[in-house]
Every structure is written in structure tokens, then in C-alpha cells.
Image (cartoon, rainbow, N blue to C red):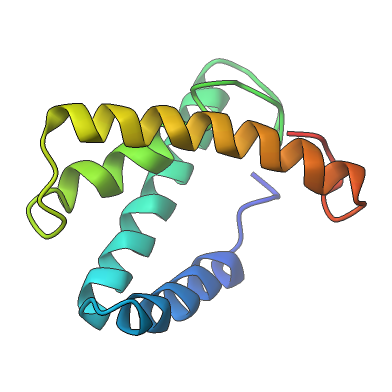
Length: 114
């Protein structure tokens, strides 16, 4: 959709790699985390297009699960995650993303409350 840009993907990669390093992880882990997160985001957009939903429309769970599950699943060895922590991580991501999106909208940082 129009809201997906190469610039956004690149910014994610550029920001996450040094953040991972600052947190004591390998730069490659940061790059993979960003890559899988962006792939999850693109997957959710693909699913929404198949469901004939307009670009940037709200789809709770479809918007959050792939973006959080893909990096958690594919990096589970690096982060020593088992199934229950992955489920908890995805659930926390869903709640935090919905709450933070609303707050950022109220502050005028986001254009939509989701």
C-alpha cells in the first residue's frame, strides 16, 4: 500500500542494528529482528489486501501478530525463547501497540488512532 515505503524499511534496519548493539546483541541480530518485523508488517498488509481492506485500515490482531510473531519465532534461539514466552511477547505487543498508537494519536504524532 501507499503507507509502505522502502525508506521505512531501511530506517527500521538502520535504527535497530545499532540499538541491538547498544543492548549487547550482535548487529546481525538487530538486522534480523528488523527484517522479520518488517516482513511481518508486509505480510499483514498482504493479508488485508486479500481481504479487500483499504490501505492503512485497522485490523486488530492481523496488524500486530505477524509483526511480533515472525521475529520472535525466527530469533527464538538467539533470545532463548520457548513457546510460552513467545505467546506472552506477542500478547504484550498487541496490547502495547494498540495503547501506544492511541496515545501517539492523541499527542498528534500519528494521523490515525491505530
